[in-house]
Amino acid sequence: MDLDFQRQQVAGRALHTLTPFEPLRTVVLDAADMKIEQVSLVDEHGKAKEGKLAFQSRSGQLSITLD
Image (cartoon, rainbow, N blue to C red; front, side, top):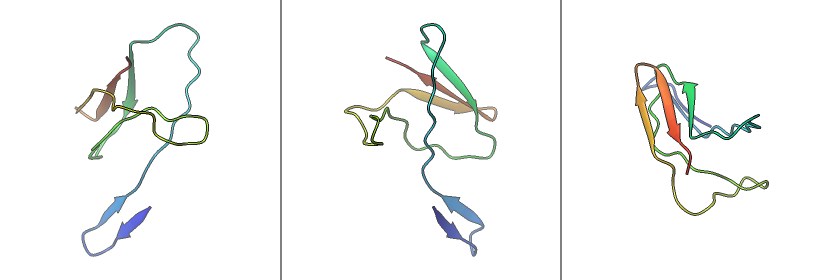
């Protein structure tokens, strides 16, 4: 995590682990006041798998399309 007090910004990486009860095509997360640059899947060691996931960030929500 990088803190930039002069610009009043925080930059970093977030990792979420989900265990769905049924197959999912889309996941929606709260992302109020966040600028999302990239979304990807990672393996059990936190290493990014090939390819990035399609996503939309609007109205304070991050909608991620799972392939």
